[in-house]
Length: 395
Image (cartoon, rainbow, N blue to C red; front, top):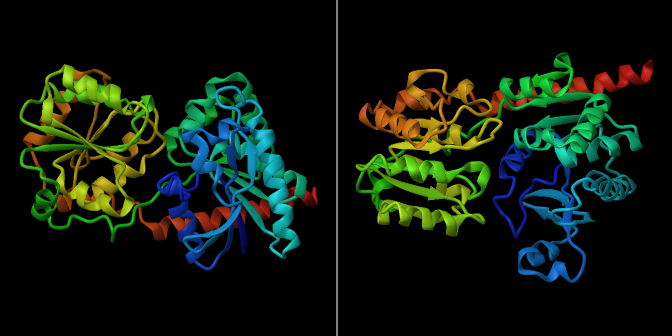
C-alpha cells in the first residue's frame, strides 16, 4: 500500500514539536511496512512580511526534504494572516496538487490520501483527491471542528468535503457527536483513538525525576501552548486556591507575558514556574515528577498529553472537552471538572492531591490506547477507504 499523508500540521526545523502527534502516528504506520510520503503545505506570507521574525524561519524551510527518515514535500502557498482563511483551502489545494503531480512523475502514485486535519488542509486534500481520482480519508482532531465549525463559510466547505470524502474518522466519540451535530452523517464517521508510547511514557523513578526538576512540594503540571484555547489563566487562578501546591507549565505561546503577570498579581511568586518549550523526549520525566496533571482547555479532541501523563502514572484534572470522559472513565484516572471556575478546578486538584493512588493503577488507565491497536485500526480504515472508492467508481 502507498499512502500520501496530507497535513499542514507537521513538524519542521523551525517548529520541531508542531503537529508531532501527527508525525508519530504517520511514522508508526510507515514502520508497519506502508510506503509513505508526506505533503505538508507551508504557508508563507508575501514579501516583505515573510521577512518578519515571526515568519522568517518558516519561509526558509526547504520545499523538499527527508525529515526524520520520511520524504516530506513542503510546497508553499500564500498565507494572508488573519484575512485569508477563506482562501486557504483553495490555495493549499493548488500547492498540494502541484506537489503530488511531481511525486507521480517521479513514480510515486498513492493508493490513498490520508488527510490529518479537517480545516483547511483536509478540505484541500479532498479537492486534490478528486482532481486525481484518488481515494481519500479525512480525520477530525478537535479544534478543526469546534473552532472552524462556528464559521459559516468554513462549515459549508467542511460539509461539502464530508459529502465527497471516502471515509471520515474522529479521535473520540464526543468529537464524532460534534461532527454529526454539524451536519455530517453519523454512519460515515468511525472513531479512531490516538495512542501513547507505553515504553517511552512509563512510571519511572519518581524521586529522581522530582530531583532533576527541582520539585520539592506537591506539584501540578500542565503541558500545552500558551494560547487562549488552553486557558492556563483558569488553572493559575485555581492554583491560587491550593496553597500547599506548586504549578509547572510546559509550553510556549503569545500569552506567556500576560500569564506571568497574572501569577504575579495573585501573589504566587515562585509557586508558578514557566518551563518554556520542552522537547518531546524530555516529557516523560516531567510527567513522572508531577503529582497531578491539569489542563483547563476550552477545546480538545482527545489530547495526547492526557494519555502521556496517565502512562507515566500521573492522574488528571481536566475540563469536560472532547473525549475527556472517554479517558477519565474511572476514579484512578483522575477528575473531570464540570464547572469552568477556579473554585471547581481547585476542589478537584485538592481531592486528587489528598488521595494519591498507586502509579501502576493510574498507568493502567492508559494501557488500552496502544500503538498496535491504533495502527491495526488505521490499516483497516485505509483498506476500507480504497475499497469504498472503488465501489463508488463502479457505480
